Image (cartoon, rainbow, N blue to C red):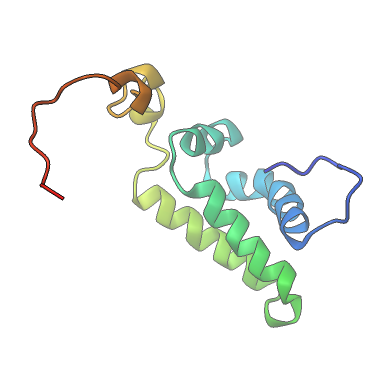
Length: 121
């Protein structure tokens, strides 16, 4: 989330991002994880950051449709889903990023002949 003040008009997304960041410490405490674990999961391309932002965007867009209690309940549901899917698994989070499959950039493979015949167009 980039909620730095740029001097421009505040958009709904930046308001939602600020709301999500403010809620993060309590959400992590309720979920039994650290903020570092949350950010490590986000860095490993788990959808935790995006899903939390989307939830807060829905809340800030129409706050009359969702109370603070309902927002917290939905945050807790997200946390339970993330934990069930193993996003905060300590063994995975401790693996060095460079050792993960798929870390190579497309540019690393440029010029490599993979000897596959493409379809004729």
